[in-house]
Image (cartoon, rainbow, N blue to C red; front, side):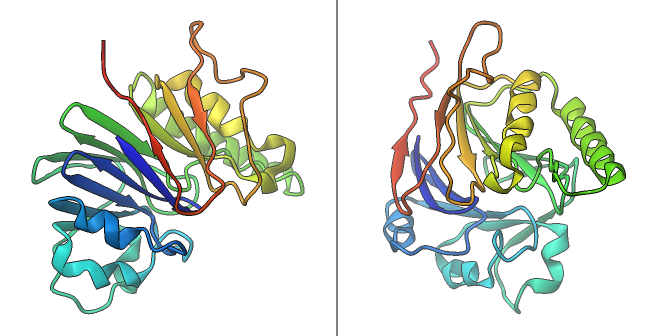
Length: 234
């Protein structure tokens, strides 16, 4: 599995002849054209309508794209197109060609995605996170916590090969609260930090360790870089 970082929460995941493109809106290094040409099947995902997660520019790839899997809140932002669009709201399961897609909720807008391609499983959180803003009211902080743990209960017991999860530097010392708790509820050998606001993060304190196992962490900083994940199961 090869993962290419675009920016923010935007990534491409190449699994064999399939390319999954998540939350794409910018590609400063022009990596997407070569990635699209390298596979047979291309699928675009967008978790919600925010401009740093969705751009109508994805429809420039309509001819090369097998399907667009979009959160329902994006409907009003999609231009006239004959593209194949699969709309998804939270807590749905759909099969698109040979890909199984399950949606979970968000603590901001839209959905989060659990995607299975063959035996490979990926979780892309979108803007699902524990958004604890230090300057917010106690009421809002409590609501953010409640929403987050409600979603964690829905994810409890899930296993994924790779998980993309926000570690937003604007949350300051609270930035890893969400990913720490997330890794208590799910099992994954590989975490990819996203939505980092260009401040690197590493699990130097081992807060993600569970049952004696420490997931690997990749925190991409350079736009266009590619990371290989070995998902071979013993």
